[in-house]
Image (cartoon, rainbow, N blue to C red):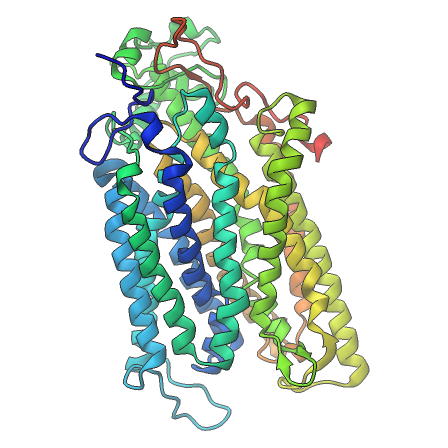
Length: 588
C-alpha cells in the first residue's frame, strides 16, 4: 500500500479509515480536549469545593453527616469511571462512551442548578431553631438524585477523555513520542485552570450572589465545551480494538496458572510459550517481554501444559497485579486530599476571614491556592526540572514514574505535619480567648492554613499527574481507559475511606460521654488529634510504597511495527523498563 504519511500505530478516523499523521492528532486535536477539561473541572469543583457549606447552611446537616455525604458523593464520582472505562475498552470505544456519558453529565448539572434555583425544587427547612431539616423530604431527594446523575455521567467521561487525548500521539513516531511526554503535565494544567475558576470565582458567587447562578455558570460552560469538543471531531484519531477484553485474558491466565500449580517453573524463558514475532507484526499487536515478577503466573505459559497462555498474556496479568499493588498505596494520600473540601473548609469557617472593612473570603476559596501553586509548579517542572534531571539521569522523563510518585507521597507527610501544628495554634488561641461557641470567630487569620494548601498543590504536581501518567503508560494494550481508572478509583476509595474514618472516629471518641474529635462545634473539639492520626497513616503508607516500588517491574514491549531500517526490537518508550526503584528511598 502506498504510504501517504499515515500514522504508524494504526489509528483511524471515526469511520474506521486510516488517518494522515500531519492532518490529525497531536496538539491540533488535543486543543479541543484540553478546553473541555478546563470547563468540566470548573463544573465539578464548582459543586464539590463548596458542597459541605451548602449542606450545613442550606440543608442544615451536622458536620459529620455533611462530611460523610460529601465524601460519599465524591467517592462515587471517582469510582463510576471503572464502569465507563470497561464499556469503552470492551464495547463502545472511548469516543462514543464519552459522547453518551457527557450528555448524562450535563443533565445532572442542569437538574442540580434547578434544585438550588427554583422554589418548587429548593429544600425547605421547617424545623425549629437548633434542629436539623428532615433529610427525607422530596426536595432534598431531588438534590441528591441530581448529584448522583452527575456522578454517573462522570463515570464515562473522566476515564476516557484523558486517554483519548493521549491517543492523539503516535508512540512509534519519535517526534510525537517526545510531545507525549509533556501531554499529561499540560492536561492537568488545564484541569487546574478549571479548578481555579471554581474556587476563586464560583465559590464567591454561590455564597454572596446566589447558589443558582453559582451552579448555572459552570453548567453553561460545560455545554459550550461539549460544542467545542465536537467541532474538533475531524482532527481526532481513534485506536482500533485488536483483541477481546483484556480482563478476559487476565482471568484466563490466573485460572490456567492455578490449574498448572503442580508444575515447577525455572528461570529459563525458553520453556514458556509465545507466538512468533511475525504474528504480532502482522496483527499490529504489542508483544511484551518476559519479566521475573509474579513467577507463579509463569506456570500459565509452560509449553508442557495443556492449552498454555502466551508470555504476552501472562505479562499483561503481571502488569495488572503490579499496578494494583501501587494503587493500594494511593488510597491514604487521596484520603488526605479529601480534607480539602471537608474539614479544611470547616476549619477555615471558624477563622478570621475579613479583608478590609467588609469583604469576607469564602473558606472554600482557599483551595484556589492549591491550584495556583500547581499552575506555577507545572511549567517549572516541565521546562526546568525535567531537562535538569534528564541530563543527570539519562531518563527522558528526568526521573522514573515511581520516583515521581514517591516525591508526591512524601510531600503529603509534610502537609499533615503543617496541618497538625496549625491546628495546635488554633487550639491555643481558642484557649487563650476562652472561645467555646460554634459560631464564635477565632481571632486568627485564615491564611494560617495557606502553607498546607500550597504544599498540597506542589505535591500534586508529582503525585496526581504522576499517577495519571503511570497508570496510562503501564496499562497493557487495549486497557488504557480501564487502567486509568486505577487513578480515579484510588481517589474514590480515598473519599470513601475518609467518610469511614470520620464516622468511626466520631463514634469511638464519643463513647462514655467523651468529646468528639470532630464535633459540630470545632471550637470545642480535638481536630489536632485527628490530624495526628492521619499523619501516622500517611507515614506508614509511605513505607509500604517504598517496599512495593523496589519490587515493581516496568512494562517492556517489543515493537509492533518494522522500523525503516528493518529492526523490530524497540527500547522501552520512556526509559523506565528494566529499571527498578531500589534506590528510590535514597533519591527522595
